[in-house]
Image (cartoon, rainbow, N blue to C red; front, top):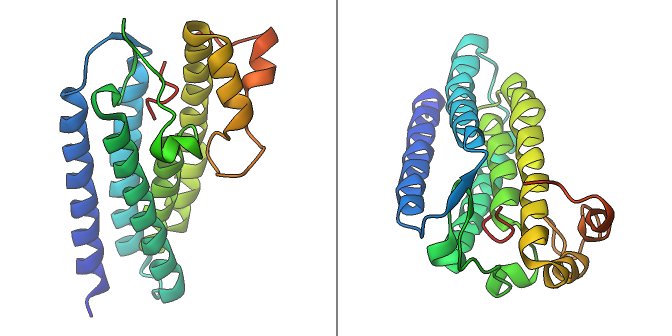
Length: 206
């Protein structure tokens, strides 16, 4: 089996799926965009992660550690499924941007009954699992140190915007539903945001 060819095919397929998702986002109801620079930063980082995965694999020529590659591929598949479920559940409110809409509603049905930001959780899993499929450990570390912190920064800003728009109902949602991991009581901002909310949307936009 030519693992290098399979890896390139995998990266191209994953990139095409993300292009489709970008097109789906453009069909959503438009609103006032906040922090538009984050979209372009994520785009640049994602392209870099995919490209560096291929570069590191072909440059380092490590023996393929199949358990790592297979496990990472399974994580990627699960992350893709989770993100698509989130996109379908949000429907017209799905967006790759932080957007404020006049009729904005935060969704609490489907997957959002169990986790507030399934798409963000899926994306974090994806950007780390993609390099690991190719045994590109340095690239996985790069993703962990760049993409993930930026995503968490945007998540905090998004939570603040939702709290500012919806007030106590969203605070209660934060207390009752974890941000990324179902049944986890970690990473909840509802109580902390009561005294010092972040300044900038989304909530159930991701």
